[in-house]
Length: 79
Image (cartoon, rainbow, N blue to C red; front, side, top):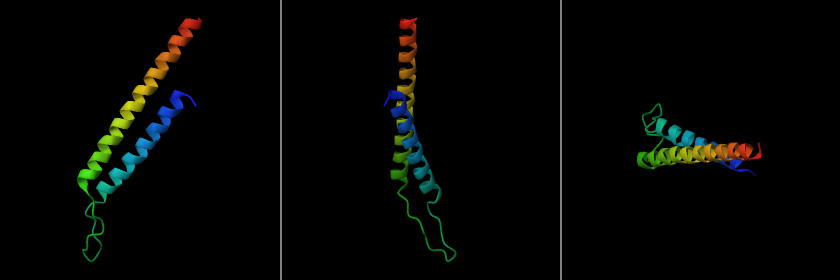
C-alpha cells in the first residue's frame, strides 16, 4: 500500500469522525414532544473530537503533499 492511499484513508476516517461529532452537537439538547431531553451531549468532548478531526485532516493532507513532491522529484531524477 502506498503513502497516498494511507493518507486518503486517514482523511476518510477524519471525515467520519467530524460528521459524527457535528451530528452530536447539532442534536444536543433535542427535546421530544413532551419536553423531555432526548440527547445529552458532552460539548467539550465533541469539540475535542472536532479539533482532532481537523488535525487529522491537516496531517494527512501534508502527507499527500509530501508524497506528491517525492513523486515529482523521482520523475525529475529519471528524466
